[in-house]
Length: 295
Image (cartoon, rainbow, N blue to C red; front, side):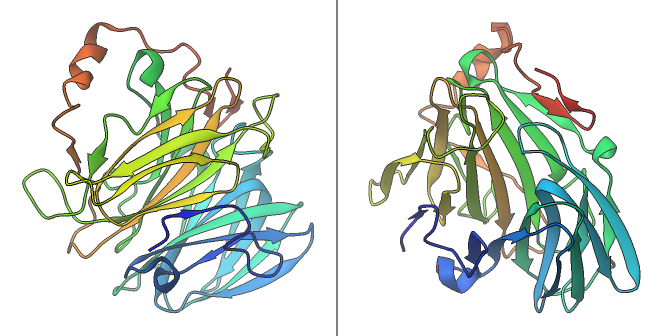
């Protein structure tokens, strides 16, 4: 399985990403990223997948099952927490762009069909995780305990200020145990350019995924629009190069009967969490909330 999928390698027509479970080589998790012009309408058939409709840039109208949701979006993933919507399996979804639109559809193969539902930005929790140079923002729009209206799908967004580390300590969720559940995970990266707001291929970050036995040991430079697949093993850190803030969308799903994002740290590095208790957080976090950009 090829884990690092650079920008352009998953393109489908005018859309940047079309990644299904079969393309990834696993069972549940997928991601589409669509581009629509202002006023353009696109119909999406969800089939056996549930999904979130998540504006990355721009706003849109979502029509599904006789319901209409107006999603107030953002200029970029670095400027605001956005509205979103949940759409069920076996649905025809009509998407209409209010402006030029880039839209993510994190998705999961599922069994149960739930009703569509709107997620307002003002109800999305923005958390600060870590401390010091491991400080990052976690936008928990689609995680268990915050958003329980899904069958298999879990998703959240992270913003890592330039020079900081996130997804640290390294952790895994590839076995059913006392501390973890099995999840397939997608990382979708956006890297800001010099202004800290506009995504650009000029900047870069680093991502690491590995297994304890060394069978998997990936250390890659990631750029704007890249995808990284995590089928197994410890993953982290994700490092934002100085000058280039990093965003990523995490999409997770797996076979467990109940949704969970439980994980186990790499025991060699879990001690690092204890050092954060006495270390100040980076004042650049949080970067955004539902009202806009804070820093």
